[in-house]
Image (cartoon, rainbow, N blue to C red):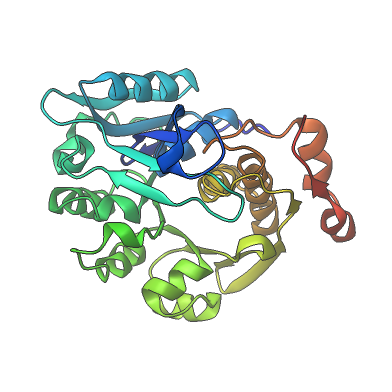
Length: 322
């Protein structure tokens, strides 16, 4: 899948170094580790770049080896990182995880990170020419007061570009902060993406109609129902598209992949059902790998499925390439 769009997407948020045990078993017994990177917004930026969409990641990293690795990885995927500040005093965030198909326990080491010091002044360094969309997530709001101020500045009207907001509920980040602000932020966005389970946890409902009543502000509401599928509520109409059957290797990053696929198709002017299919196909690429960002599926898979009838779509079964 490739999209030829006149403008680009700015993705704003923290990315950290990730350590994953390189051998099976509990973390405490691991002797060797694989270093990767992980961040919801940079994941979206990388997936957008792989879909042919010009993307820019805006953030901050420490002046350390982890920060250099993050910049190398994101820029190496074709994402513009000129909007990333290298902080000489604060470190790059880090998290450690175990990888398993049923879920991935994560421990964060991000308090006082370079990205947590981001504030509204980060927007002053941006060139807004040819920006079609700004993408943010609820994770940023949990990092610090200045990061919350940054999101409010992004969502302030009038603004130079529409904004998409992914709820990205991370309960571990909200122990000493008030998550009620997430409703304010979501309702100020143009496009909102949320999993039905996380919306239930944060807003008390995962039902698309009830969420639309609770969030009247966004033009488009996208509710993800896990493996079952996803729903778009837009212009008074509701569209549901079933998910694909996928042999899941590891689920982390699939939501970011879905967001990138959906947003690329949305910006291309595709109808809701097709946007959801692009999202599902891009999510499958992440589900089929242990990395947060997997390789996109080949056109031989995606092109026929995008235009398949409902029976063919339902019968598709994606397995890991060997």
